[in-house]
Length: 316
Ligand code: BDR
Ligand code: CA
Image 1 (tube, rainbow, N blue to C red):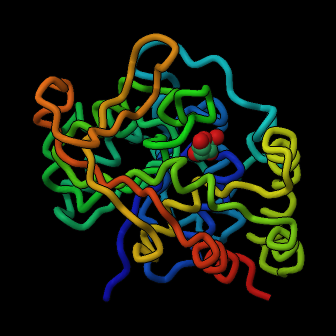
Image 2 (cartoon, rainbow, N blue to C red):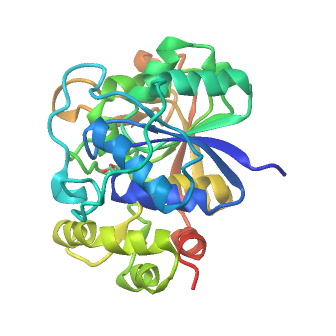
Image 3 (cartoon, rainbow, N blue to C red):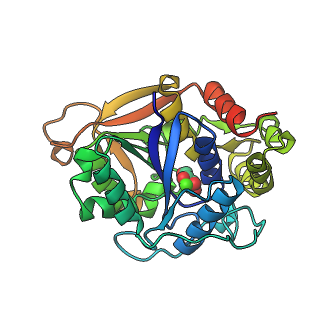
């Protein structure tokens, strides 16, 4: 089987970096581009970090396109530097990259790639969904021509992490998320329902430090800040590998339990960014009617997915 072609839309970010390296080390996947979006950092830094990560991986052949600086509505102001660092890479402050982004925008790149290879490209958004909504706006026919969308974001049956209601990627741009969940294409939501069960322990993390791979060494350098945050917030040791879980789904879908529910995203009030599943038929729930079902991951065999990630990125 030829490798599955993917575009990772990302705001790197510590767990984004882990996910990107996981994908680059998986022969079942061919990463044909990284598209950058605001989120864990402002978009210019997201581009810089994407370029740096590809250099570390020895994959500067992969293009990086710059995307949205702001959500569809409003201005982005507050990157979570207390989780990912001022530099989005755990405050290790790498030297500037030696390469630059392509001149196409993220939306233009996504549209061009999908329309030139109908049915072949999988989109893997692991940040706010702004670039994906903009690509749909630019060329609505990508919905019929993409292979599938597998995204990290949302919370169906569990609380949020950005607020009690909402998960961070969706909370950063709920309007864009509602467009993406509402388009007529195959979307799989790898959200907090499963990623909060995908925790790497101290012992797991040591395997990065023990590996001689430059990618593993980079992860070992950047994860202490994120790990400290996790310990403070969750009160236990362990690091949630949110974004890597979307990559794990592509490689090992049988490790997941999946339900089919249409999703609406709340765009108002204190529940802004909450992803609401349509759990059972209800004639009064008109906001969900005529929406395609989303594949919502609700269960995971995280021992398997985490072992796969470590074997790929941190070989002994
Ligand atoms: C998501 O938010 C970001 O901070 C992470 O990179 C991940 O994509 C988890 O809610
Ligand atoms: Ca992310």
